[in-house]
Image 1 (tube, rainbow, N blue to C red):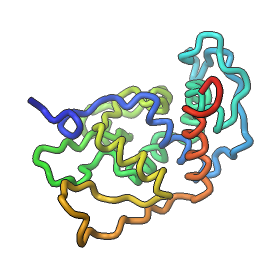
Image 2 (image 1 turned 45 degrees about the vertical axis):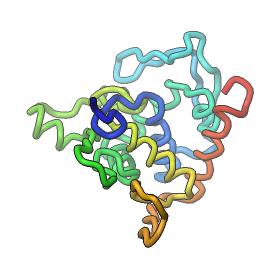
Image 3 (image 1 turned 60 degrees about the vertical axis):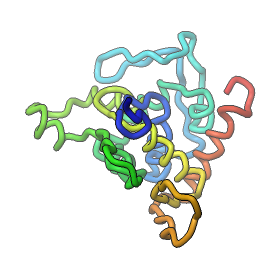
Length: 201
């Protein structure tokens, strides 16, 4: 009898790549033209990390990495960004915090970082954990409602509205403008459009 949309938190998986691409482009860690070769796996910090596509995606830029959900691209992006910047952008999207919807029992979810690891696990954050977080695995936990809000922010050009249950849209506060790079959001929007509209997406 739980409202799973806001009372349960899950590993977001590849949907978290929206955060990764926005962070990478906004921080100028990557450009739209930078590419990574995906042979189906890669080695980072001496450990192998596999892509979901056994044969690999070949050479992909951020647009193609979003369209085809290339894990290898985002593993390397996660290594470049580091967990602090990943956490910063996840929180800008409102992840790891209640959305403010007027229903009781909303879960916060979890956006991990080194401070969280020391406080709650009593161990340091390990760099290899960042690689897992980069594809929405590891300790990161989010509610479906938070993910819907994140997607809406991309679709709305960076505007974040608090979800409400209402009969009439009267006297609602103006959506907050999140300080994302508009060019980054536009690139991410095009990549997400390609997921369902480009061949092989």
